[in-house]
Length: 505
Image (cartoon, rainbow, N blue to C red; front, side):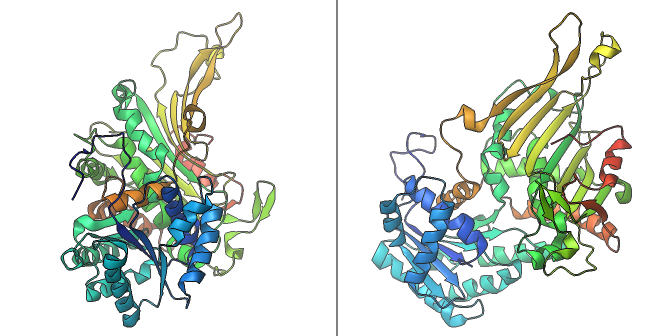
């Protein structure tokens, strides 16, 4: 039962979940060690976890609770955002348990179910549990069927709420996404399914909504009358790391474009929701995803690339085909750029250029709104040679903030005009550091807030955009580009044909 003295609008008290368990499948993997366990520690350190909170780790290794606690300690101390406090860790660690077993091991899942039942008596947890799938997508159906067999996904049987968190990629095309959606919605109540896209947990991404709908300054010009084009860039300076098997089977478009970048596009282009209720926000994003138009000629309106050996940040980088466990004849793309349109009145004729790439000169994710040039410039042409488009740039990472570029007179005796920048940075404007995306999203799962989680319809509509691209690219070779470059030359040519150029990120 909720607190009758408290309302959702009361901001004086933090959101704290009911007593519950967080079950992490694949708890010894990279995601768990680098993101989830540190996020749990940071939530505990901020006083945002209930006294009755337990972390249950499930993985194949034959470990005991003490071994798991040691792994978790190292992971939390290395990845924590907030200051390290040994007393906080000791309280949290006393609530860690480990259940060894494989995903096809009925006995292990029976043991997990018994452990959850025991928590009612021992920890005062009334059947509340969230299951986090930090596992390869191929294992999702197996684990879901085990949760269905044991009744662990059943709210009525558990006597509390049971939720599931599913990491991307959600399927690898439309048909597999539909099948997986059907399975997960059969095992869990659809409202208890959290399809996580960690980009939506970033403060700068959420600030897109504040920027647009809390200010009267931007909305009047947020349309095709004033906007020339939109560029969304996600560049990484790293290669594929230890993800060779997964990455070579998916590629840049399935790995990032289908989820992160299309979600950013939807937030930029959506209409104002009637409220920030999760259903209202998702309804507006879904309208945008349904209105996306892919290029009529995909060969001209998109580019695939694959990095060659080169130099990044002064260090030698091998090519994609020289990466460990990558086939020598692989045609998987490490770079993808595509020109998308949105078929509605607000965005008619405005191109959305979306690109993602690995082994780029530096790591940056940003959204650039490029405005049309003034229809008439009463200046001498020589005085405005350095004047470009007005730009509003939302920097998602790493230098979180917003930049507004506009023309200003250069001091002197002539009327020379050039671009200058007004730069807002989160780190300078606010004393409190931004929480990690997983910190916010794990808390949202535990309190039952689905605002930042895409639903099944959004996932399936995103695949409707990606599948035709993948079909057109099948059997083609990606364009080469050297590590340390901003992608293939064909990508620059794609924009040049329309008189535009990529913004220098």
